[in-house]
Image 1 (cartoon, rainbow, N blue to C red):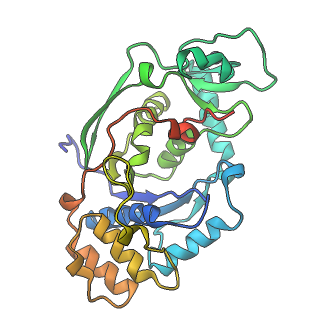
Image 2: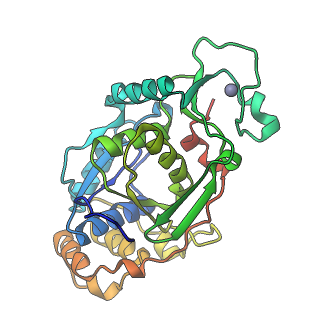
Length: 307
Ligand SMILES: [Zn+2]
């Protein structure tokens, strides 16, 4: 990617939600983001995205962090939890409301059924005690960005997403707002994550623009499914991310990133494996088996439209 000025120092991150133990898909994102950071001579931070308590599993974030340590994937900065950061999100929301980029919305999901859940204008006269807050997406809003792994990406956010939720009517902060605020506050320069979040990136770019924040570089890693959404071979599916026996899962994640199995075959410790992986990593080998940008019903949590 061409830049007109020197790049800032590289700081990447891994940001799991504590909805269960780490699985191979999340390990691919952790290892991939760690390798991209190390290959760039940069830092790798960890953030716990615990915004939705009903979806979370007690103790999961502690087990996730302990598992990362067992895999020798150790954060270079402080580990923060989104549940501690509501004041930051509120300040950003207040700015968006004051600038007119955001508005209160009393519509229910049923009110928006006729438009497939896409909000273009408020359609109810009802008033809730606590309305949702949405970002206004003007007609004609299209976002284009360059993904370091997938190339040019574009989304017509007005037609494909609509005005999107920043704070839900039932109270929780939407993922999109929290991620944008945290990435800026933590000085994240590079977002490397699973391609299941590709669909969120145009919304996050719109929020960065509305808040006057820099947009990080993006790279979306392949999911642990094939291009048609089918599960991978049993040999990869069967890999258990076991903190007591980390080498098989690290090798499987390395393989899923398209890297040469032989480069890490003889390593007998996690430290040795990661050092070898760092030396041999080639981002150009990462498979580009990501889904195209499109709306997906499974994205409803990240839309923040659950009601
Ligand atoms: Zn509305």
